[in-house]
Length: 159
Image (cartoon, rainbow, N blue to C red; front, side, top):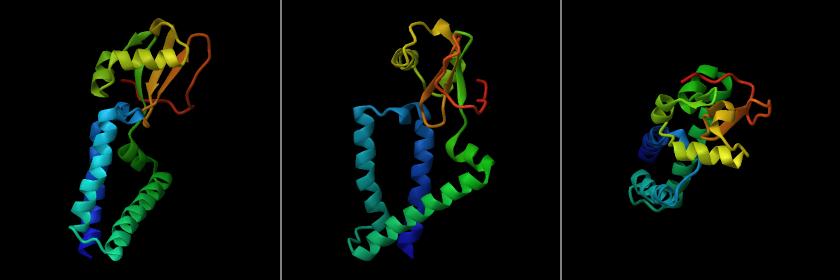
């Protein structure tokens, strides 16, 4: 039972860490961040199983993480307000060709990352962007004045 409690605590801690890290970081990991997250897996294993290398401990720990992931997915599908808490909301980072610096700073999105994402979508100038949205999954969606877009239909929260 202790392993299950430890797994729940570590699962909640990891969820908090990924929320703190920020969606811009999760959209595309740097080499250092990838190494950090891989290393974190080994550290988590030690915290959860407390040096118990038995098959039973491994099954309990992985099973608890799996069950919590399924429960979280069910809650997100069932309750829209829970999704806002667990995944966040889309945030407008460019409006009428002007980057919203305060929103970008809050989301820890650098201008360079914004410009690079725009270039990958074939956008030459930010002034051509009617609206850019940092999605909850860390991706950027751009809506240009010519009517082409790369986004969904749900209205994002204005910065």
